[in-house]
Amino acid sequence: MSDGPLGEFGPLSLHVPEPAVRHGGEPDFSNVNIPEAGSVRRPEVDTNPEDIRDLAFSIIRVLSRDGEAVGPWAGLLTDDQLIEGLRHMMTLRTFDARMQIAQRQGKTSFYMQHLGEEAVSCAFRKALAPGDMNFPTYRQAGLLIADDYPMVEMMCQIYSNERDPLKGRQLPIMYSSKEHGFFTISGNLATQYIQAVGWAMASAIKNDTKIAAGWIGDGSTAESDFHASLVFASTYKAPVVLNIVNNQWAISTFQGIARGGSGTFAARGLGFGIPALRVDGNDYLAVYAVAQWAIERARRNLGPTLIEYVTYRVGAHSTSDDPSAYRPKTESDAWPLGDPIVRLKNHLIGRGVWSDERHKQTEAEILDTVIAAQKEAESFGTLHAGGKPSARDMFEGVYEEMPPHLRRQRQQAGV
Image 1 (tube, rainbow, N blue to C red):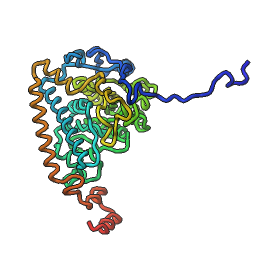
Image 2 (cartoon, rainbow, N blue to C red):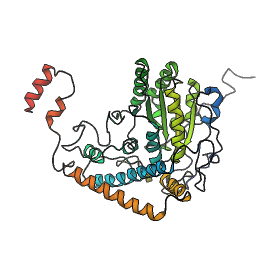
Image 3 (cartoon, one colour):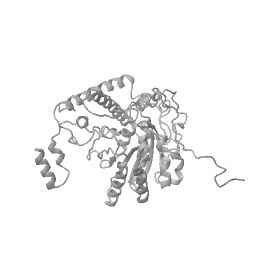
C-alpha cells in the first residue's frame, strides 16, 4: 500500500540537453537524417499547410553527391545565373577573410564571418524583387553582396570612418540600406522578427506588392519575440517569409538547447498553421528554389512560410569567440552537407560551363577587387587612424525637428 500520493514516485530530475560531442571528442552527425537529393516532393504553392507537415521534418536537396541537379526542385536557374551565384559566394568569403585579418590588425573592433553559410543569403536574395525588405541578423551580408551593394561602403561601416554611411552609430557589420532592402540590423536578438511581420502587415494594409523576409539564428528562436512573430504572422496571414538559419551552434551553445523537444526548428511553425520546410542550406539551388516557393506564396496573399536552413558555422561565432573551446576542431570537416562553394563549383564543372582553372582565375580576380575596395575604404580611415564621423552627427537625423534639449547639448559639446 502506498504511503501517500507521492510514495510510488522517486525525486524529480531536470533534463539538460547535451550535444553529441564536445571539445576533444570525435565529430558525430549521426543524428542528422539526410534524404537523397531530389527525393522530397515539391507541393503546389497554394497547398494546405496540413498537407505538407512532413516537409518540416525532412531536408529539401537538389544537388546530389555527384554534383547533379535532380528532383522536382531543380531546373529553376540558368548556367549564367548559377555562375553569378558562385561569384557572389566567393566574393563574400573573400570579403570575410580580408575583414577578419583587418580586425586582427586592429583596424576594426569586431567582425563576424559567414564561412560555410554563404549559400543561404546569396541565393535567397536572387529570389526577391526590388522593394522587398529583409530584416536580417548579423550573418546575412550575402543579401547585400548579391545585390551589388558597394563593398567600399560596407568596409567604411566596419571601420567606422568618415565615410561610414551610418556615421558611427552602429557596431561594425550592422549594415543598413533601404535601397537594397536591408533593414538596420539590431544587436538585440530576435527583435527583427516581429519587425518583419509588422512591416509585411503594413504592406498588406496599404495594398502594396512588397513582401518582407525575417531572419533569425537557431539560438534566438528561444526568444519570446520569435513566438510572438508567429502568432501575428499566422493570424493576419502576413506576406512574410520567416527564415531560421540553423548553423548548429549559438555562440558556444549547441542548437539542441533552443530547439528543445520539437524535433526540428521548422516544426515550430506547425502549431501556428504555418507551412514549414527544411532545406539544405549548403545547396545554392535548393535554397533558391525553396525561397522562390515561399516568396510566391507571400506575394499571392497565401500567408507566411517558415523555412529552416540546415547548415554549419565553420568559423567562430565572432572575432570574440574561440570555438575550439567547446567543439571538436575537426567537426567542420565532418559536416555531411559539405561546402556550398565547392558543391556549386563541382555542379558547374559537371555541366561543362566551369573548370578548376577558371575557378582559380576567378578567385584571383575577386581577391584583387576586394583588396582594391579595402584600400579605398582605408583611405578614409580605420578604427585607430584617419578620419572619423563628426560628433555632430549624433545629434542629426534623430528627430524631424531637433528639440531644445538636444540643441543645448550640441552647443555644449561645441559641435
